[in-house]
Length: 80
Image (cartoon, rainbow, N blue to C red; front, top):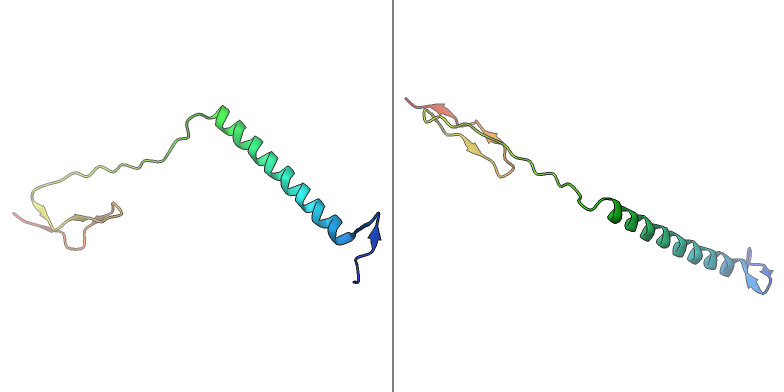
């Protein structure tokens, strides 16, 4: 086949495949080492916890809080 000449008993295709496997193993090893460093040096990973405070007044009716935490004022009105 074109582009697959013999070099030392291996074709260029098998040489490239073995190189990619070696590179993948080295990459995996480096990623595992980076993960270990991260876990050793940062024992706690902060998580985002958003909190919203709302004031409520009995004179205002029709206000609702959506499932996403947004205040819905579309149907709000004053009731005296």
